[in-house]
Amino acid sequence: MRSFLCAALAASLTLPAAAQTGPGQARFRTLYKELVETNTTLSAGDCTLLAHKMGAHLKEAGYTDADLHYFTADGHPKEGGLVARLPGSDPHAKALLLLGHIDVVEARREDWTRDPFTLIEENGYFYGRGTADMKAQVAAWVDTMMRLKQEGFKNRRSVKMALTCGEETSTAFNGASYLSNHERDLIDAEFALNEGGGGRLNKDGKPLMMTIQAAEKFPQNYQLEVTNPGGHSSRPMPDNAIYKLAMGLTKVSAYAFPIQASDITRQYFAKLSPQVGGEMGAAMTAFAKDPTDKAASAKLASDPSYNAILHTTCVATLLNAGHANNALPQRADANINCRIFPGTTPEQVRATLQEVVADPAIKVTLVDKRSEVPKGPQPINPRVFAPVEKLVAKMWPGIPVVPSMSAGATDGAFLTPAGIPTYGVSGMFGDPDGNGAHGLNERMRVKSAYDGRDFLYEVVKIYASQK
Ligand SMILES: [Zn+2]
Image (cartoon, rainbow, N blue to C red; front, side):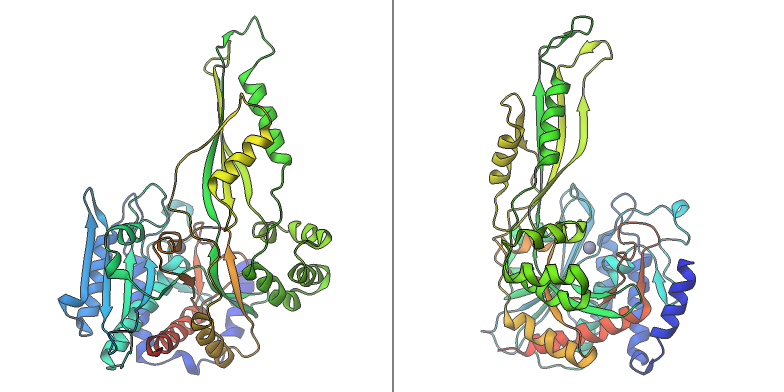
């Protein structure tokens, strides 16, 4: 049923094909195919190999070895990346950075309908691991860099492109983190364009809005831990590590962090409201006007996606306790995964959790740290937003351009603390279900990929010409 629907939809959506043809599109598709078909999972893939393949295309287009900088870190030979640079004419103009991760989430052939590492076009969709997250955008970055060079485009500011590995696995070597900490000059820019934004289609395949991701929540894990001398289970005592932890967890589950709002989330709800309509749309309008409106935030919080951007959230994800079925537990601990609203610190959230469990025997500690904490929400910078608004009005008239905050994390979290504001701009329209990103049968609508390619090329030219 689903694939029939998709096929029917795709057929109706791809009718005006004039803008989709041309020899350049074939090259984009070749790049996309090579990106998807080069496995870049952490377990069996090779980002370094793929970075060199993309570098070879740039050389064919006229880039010299001096324009291409490959990097790897000790102990991570297959997790390398590439920074390419197209110098601008004005040495005083700060650069534009195009950021893309080339690694992908694991995918098992036996679980998928089609081979995840073959780019397959079917029913108006491209299928394959990374088709949506984020190899279509990477193909558009490489294609744009090649076109600018070959067309002799007179870019005022330098255009840089960083292809990195390790975004999808928090324990892996992260190229964006490495560049921010060790090769900051190479990627220095006024701002960076990254994944995280893009178009949303409604369930009927109609474009709803174009988002520019201007903020993201900060992921942080906490451990709740209770220790106890234990003893023989034939002689129970009131002081039990498992019961204590369970009581603390129950309190965490019942607690909701205070509602927060930023310019970004208020604009997001204000602009989304007319598209959504009904009671939910009315709640969006009310919340955008007055974030202290309790009825409005309660209505929004009934939807998990909207709830996720209303406040910090914390949820239990792992549990460990006891050491034998006939012993009183000596230890019980749980992992609480929090997604912190910009402007709140991980320590503030830790202190709140400690207060919520209301028991000094439950120790709340920060577990690991993915990155430095990004400095609050980023400004809604007209130098970033105006070019997108201009182009969206031309390509998709009537579609609002909406600033958004991601509940999840991207590599932008490494660049913003290093002083490079990072915005999610893709121009690619996705389905409401998330296109199977990270999951099974990941896909990208064919029209979205080709339109996104055109969009990104045009928007990069506008940015590259900015004073
Ligand atoms: Zn991604």
